[in-house]
Image 1 (cartoon, rainbow, N blue to C red):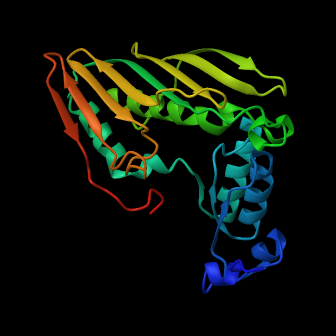
Image 2 (tube, rainbow, N blue to C red):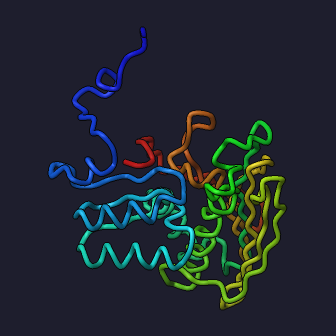
Length: 258
């Protein structure tokens, strides 16, 4: 009592009784899937079969087999299936790719990136610590540094992305069996090496660093792109070999998903 209901909080919204009702509704064109990881494949496939376009939270799936099945369902239905790596479509990310392609820091040789935060403590009931909900840092936030490394390595090679030809990793599995902090080394054809790390039980600096023969680029919290309430607008810092620094901001303040 005393709290506004959903109808007051979201005027004009219709409330449907469950996922099946949502998929059966002819007025619904697209669905956003933000349930815990293990449900992504099942509901993305059901949505495609119901003719709905899908924006699915990362990780798209828990296995390559699931991801293939989801993409197959979308292809057959002729529907859109997108993974919610929203930063990939932001103007700041485009600016970063252009800087790499234009040789702003010379030839790219190394990439270092982390996405790590510390939960208040071990919380067995929380999805991030629940093994049956595919908890841990790798599936939740590790995909960001990996996807960025693939994007940058690709830009340096004049391609949309590049796949690493060697990967090695190490992680600490906590008391519930999920990875609480983890790191990996990725080697790309052409020689670029990326160090990526993630965590749910450890705060990291979360700055993307790209090292080239003529300088380096730093991007704090690159997945925020347009910035967040705590740190202001997103920015790219170009540091030349001589030590001069240039800060580039695309001054895009709209919501990241817009």
